Amino acid sequence: MANLYSQAEADRLAFWSAQAHKLDWHKPFTQTLDWSQAPVAKWFADGEINACFNALDRHVLAGHGDRVALLFEGEPGDTKTYTYSDLLVETKRAANALLNLGINAGDRVAIYMPMIPETVIAILACARIGAVHSVVFGGFSADSLRSRIDDAQAKLVITADGGYRKGKAHALKEAVDHALSAENCPTIENVLVVKRTGTEVVWNPKDIWWHEALAEASAEHVAVGFDAEHPLFILYTSGTTGKPKGILHTTGGYLTGASYTHKTVFDLKPETDVYWCTADVGWITGHTYVIYGPLANGATQVIYEGTPDSPTFERWWQIIEKYKVSIFYTAPTAIRTFMKLGKEIIEGKDLSSLRILGSVGEPINPEAWQWYHDVIGNSRCEIVDTWWQTETGSIMISPVPGAFKTKPGSAQRALPGIKVGIVDENGRAVEVSTAGSVAGYLTIDEPWPSMLRGVWGDHDRFVETYWSKFTGKYFAGDGARFDEDGDIWLLGRIDDVIKVSGHRLSTAEIESALVEHHWVAEAAVVGAKDEITEQAVVAFVILRQDEIADAPDEESIGKILRAWVTEKIGAIARPRQIMVVTELPKTRSGKIMRRLLRDVAEGRPVGDVTTLADSSVMTAINDKLSLGAND
Ligand code: PRX
Image (cartoon, rainbow, N blue to C red; front, side, top):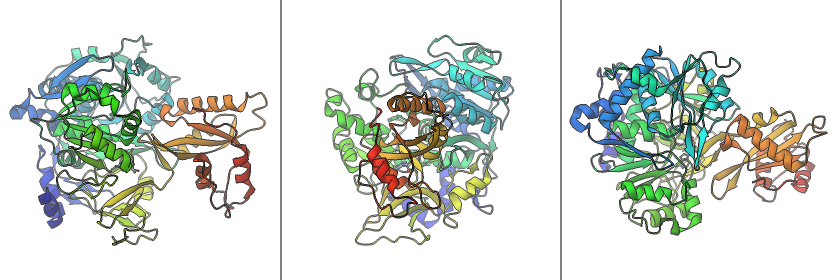
């Protein structure tokens, strides 16, 4: 591994070219990077590649068709195994089904599914024919789905009648119907519906059963190469303004980043390892480390449909024991939840197959790291704390197993080939000092293959958000500091993006959902520290006196507004607490001072109020604190 660092150090572009050459190219590339139109990069631009061919066909052609690709465990306990050959046959059928529906290369397809094998097949089928997938997490509301379909101008939605969550069938098709109702989403021509739960669904003229479409489709399909810069997918993520951004990833560079990092960080041995990443494919972790990375590397992996507590919190550990999982990748929130429950949850489970444990999505506190290491890993597994983002496409900062000694709570070093820095407000580099360095802003200083290529339909926002704060550097939105050894410690977001259970939410988006309710005149949302979920949504609202004459008491208002946010965005954005206030703390220029609201939400004495236009506001809010916790 030390080798990788020195190779990348010696010649970064040659290093990336070598990584890209580990993939199968329909047409080889001759140019590694074209940065002449910065910040839009072109990697391997004159090459042609098919991401699905790399995920499936090449393993079958290399004689590994009988290797298990997916070990599926449904929440109710049903199971299904797919070899690479099985997955290829199904994906070819699905690709033909899409072609039969008139989907062409470049068309956008929205995917709104539970965690089942058909989701993997649907995604790969899109990639195979060059259609651009836009996966929308199944926990998002119909409204969120509608806005994403509209923004991407998708032609098709692939969904399921439902999926199993927390012991119940959870409807999905219903939300699609709702999103498409009243002639909304006019670009959608068809809805392909996978039968998963057997729940009765309303049938509309655009609807087609997935199993019927696949049964009619041929199992023969030859994958062709697409330009390396052909769009592979769009994935919406929250930013600092109300509207989610469609992060665009293209084919060759993304796949290079996904496969290289997956192999390096998890030290993957595809012949013997059983890998399990618990992320839903609705998030970037599911894209890169459930779909593209592991499949491009020919891994055998577990996918599990349900929640960790179904039927009890022993479920995950039973799955690890049952399938002899050796590489496990999850989020700190889950680790903290288990830690709170105590080591009894793993009593009697044989977890001796584990060798690498990964963490992603939010900073992992040293206590949770240690517990993960000592209890789950029985003090013999490597922990890899991986920092990255939807925008970076693949892991940027992480220890590499065996390369150096790990430290609880630190993601440590940029991977070989990646250049990161920490700068102060003026863009000056923060140097490593013997006493440990001051905190600054995390930047990525050189282009990398899996970097986002833009924000769908909004080039200005792309430039403005990521490339204008520090000239020539990618601004990540995270705070970070070096310790005296030069290891990096991530300090969380420095903007109005919050992380709840590793899910990325925008305070502005929740605020605009709240003010859409006719009772609400103004809203301010903050992320308050939470022992388990890292942050929790706390909303402060000013009610419209003219509208609330007949409104119920404040507790009921809180309940109704929380349900409203669930309906507008999804349950993941539901505020833990809603505080009804009569004023919000603002500066003289009218900016809401969230720092002070965070103090209130976290139960701390309120900080410096001298810049407030009216400093008595905070006293009023503190005195009020009317509702307490709504959860
Ligand atoms: O704040 C960082 C945090 O998650 C953000 C990216 O969120 P998202 O695009 O949803 O991707 C999550 C999965 C890659 C980052 O800006 N984050 C992610 N991983 C870590 C982290 N913070 C600290 N440590 C991590 N390992």
